[in-house]
Image (cartoon, rainbow, N blue to C red; front, side):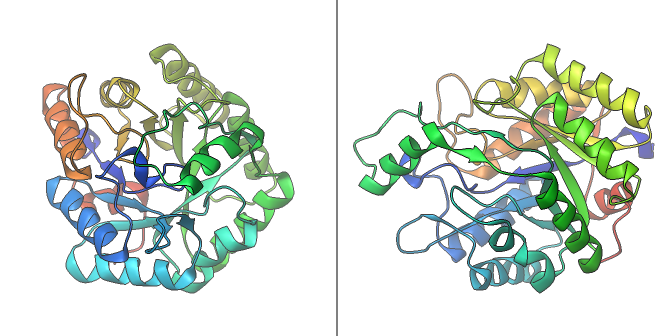
Length: 304
């Protein structure tokens, strides 16, 4: 049954985590490509990619790095490669969005509202570099900026590139921002919405808040009129939200960008491990994992 299919997305490296948090976080182009391919082989239909400076591990918006990563993944597997337009601390909207015009991806993330984004509570580990501690601490004053002017501009760039936006909503007000963009005819239905819950400064990664977000989206856009996925930041939120999404007919995002733990006792050794755990949940909840091409059909993407 097509409606029984659930696709899994894997967020490979992120733009807010720092490598000193876990040896599993990929940094170089080769590491990011290898990790993405392994996640796809484990069952991820979509790989969500940020890039990092290969020498330092700092989050980067370097276009050449994106081009290398996207080309490297596409050469080795059939995954939907979804670059970020969210970037990391201190990046401008133009830096974040230039991957759209240059690479014209099938799918990319589209952050629809501003909010405080705090990671300063991450425990400082002895192996962290000074820049990593400074980066974490700087988020005490960090506002992840996505103004109406920014989102209007992003919407234009997505259309020009022929890229479908995955609308990243971190709080319930962001859904009303999506409704506004839709009213202004800046977005083309059917929408694909990602509920990202658990960031300090936005909505919590609880079942109640996921249900609230989904209920609000249904009221605004119509139940069944959009596709959606859930991403829980941290453990156990990542897998609690994954299970809930599967039960409610949604899709799932896991990955080292969002969560570093496989279970209470173990840190994840790879993105593939997190995908494999999500893959075990789907059949237990009567959902069948979708292939990359099946995910393309669900999302209405152009054939690769």
